[in-house]
Image 1 (cartoon, chains in turn green, orange):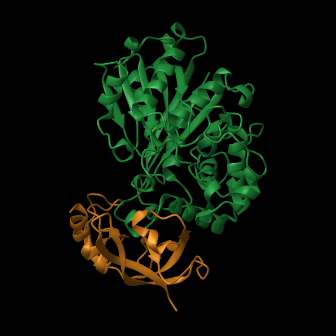
Image 2 (cartoon, rainbow over the protein chains, first blue to last red; image 1 turned 90 degrees about the vertical axis):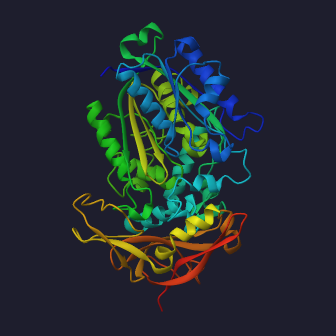
Image 3 (cartoon, rainbow over the protein chains, first blue to last red; image 1 turned 30 degrees about the vertical axis):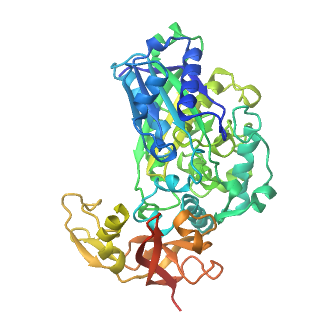
Length: 383
Length: 132
């Protein structure tokens, strides 16, 4: 296997982008990544695109052809990959494997979701759960995470305020990110007084509905300096599966897929949790950010709440979490999220993260979840 | 049409709470599975009728439902640990969530679940209520 490097990244502005179509979003992300990598479109040998549900959000399948066509890259081979909200992480991983194997040299991995072309996106989002035995009962996505939160509060004494702090810290970082959907600070009181979505979770515990796209360019590590002075190296790429239905988990307050993927990633990179200097976690809901801190091994099970309350996850804390603003503040265009997380860690490792830059960072991690934990990817990068 | 067929296929499980039991390891599953995840090919699954008695493992009160459930909002959903050991996701009827706590005993009831999509096909199935 060859080592793999990232030589270019991009992210579009995230938000409710009424005047930008699905195809224009992904094209913008792709072009920016190609420019950032200082390559030509013709240098690309393969494309992987993460997308959860173009079929339900914009009534378009066969997006692999659509994207290659619209970007003028025919006959480039393209593969669309899907694992709900972890589709982006999968696209990255498949690109990495294509380069590592020696099958391709220069590959683009991208992610895109256009969620605001439908009046109500919730039925589409609900298809990430078990449609026949969860959604059929009237369960919504926020309510599944709400049930994890309720049980975590019951077992470990996690407080409503600690969950709110997850959102507050995200927004503190996101306020410094010009590409974020909601670049403003919020307070604990605002979270606690926002409208109930699925008790105990409130509106400001939930990531928003977002349009957006992101892309990364990969090449063999040994070639990276031909293209850039600031390559970022892939130290580990791991993926694991869990049960699709939340009720079938061994423990509903632990996402075993995260634990398995993280353990594999640490082993691949020959690293420990203490070696990670920044992490982008999948905080689709505040509770999932808290679970990630535990399941990635940064604190013991049950200690996520106190860790957030004590400032451990802030940019100057022991393990800075979501310097980008996370899914909560940056936004969560489902299939694009895993790639946007990667772009943020690459900018941090290059020292290009502007006002939200973490000083002296050499190792970063991304954590992308599909559904309630049916799929997890964990990646580790270094400069 | 697809809603009718999909619902019809699941009538035995949804009306009578039919699950699977593995005769090799003794584990019980709901819904019915083809393969025991513990024993895989060594396992031997047979269908069993579950008792419908269990305890609240966790719950939530939904205030922002999807389309087919808007008329009953807000409503309570829960993960219930059945006495056979398996867990199931279901609504809790006759409750606004204030009178529920983790560990409360619940029992099976048969109810209308939803009118699906534009065709309005009614599906029936299991819900649970607090045991008095």
